[in-house]
Image (cartoon, rainbow, N blue to C red):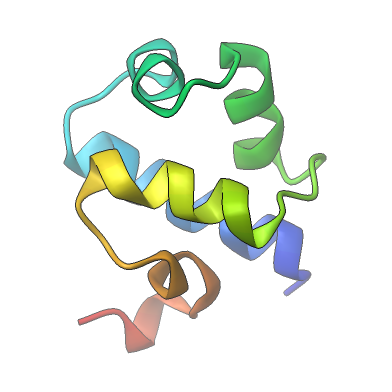
Length: 73
């Protein structure tokens, strides 16, 4: 799977598990909602700094956004 698609899928999984909308997550990160949407759709290529910003309100380590579903723990 392409890395951008993987990051997007993982971001959506953790965001929904946290009960956050894209808008709420974007607000917590200081990002625009359309940027979060683009990351989830795999059309944006977030930097490691942005991955850290996205992971913080989800209370996960940023690396969790980079691993395949079967290896999440």
